[in-house]
Amino acid sequence: MRKLIPILLLAATGVQAAPATPLQPMAFLAGHCWKGSFADGKTTDEHCFQWQYEGHVLRDVHTVRAAGRPDYVGETLYYYDSASKQVAFLYVENGGGYSRGTMLASKDGLEFPETDYVAAGKALRYRVHWTPSSADGYEAHSEMLLNGQWTTQFRLQLKKQ
Image (cartoon, rainbow, N blue to C red):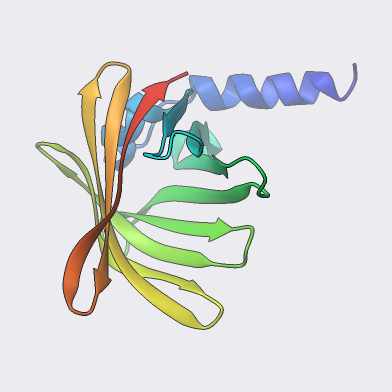
């Protein structure tokens, strides 16, 4: 029971925090998990968002699950970079890969301009757009740069859990 109390206090603190103004466009995500299924119908992607550090950081714990494979797990921290005057992020995952990038609010949703995912000494250029589709859902559209052409990596409809 002693271990449970600090966990409950941390969870309550994260949910109640108000976001820093630059992170406000991401507020709809906080305090919820969002889950979608890939086209194969067997692989799921789940993102759980929580405010950290009195609303100065939005934490996203990301898990891709597929039968017969170990989970792919990553974590993204979104924060306001006062030097560049924009929302930035750091993503790390359980295979050792990482990304650093930015987020821009647009009239259609959230834009993650092109950046690199780096793993095993190789970089993959990608960009992402999240478009709210309802109060309980958003579409994630990810593209990667292959041979000089932007190609859809995936389109995924995520629903609030």
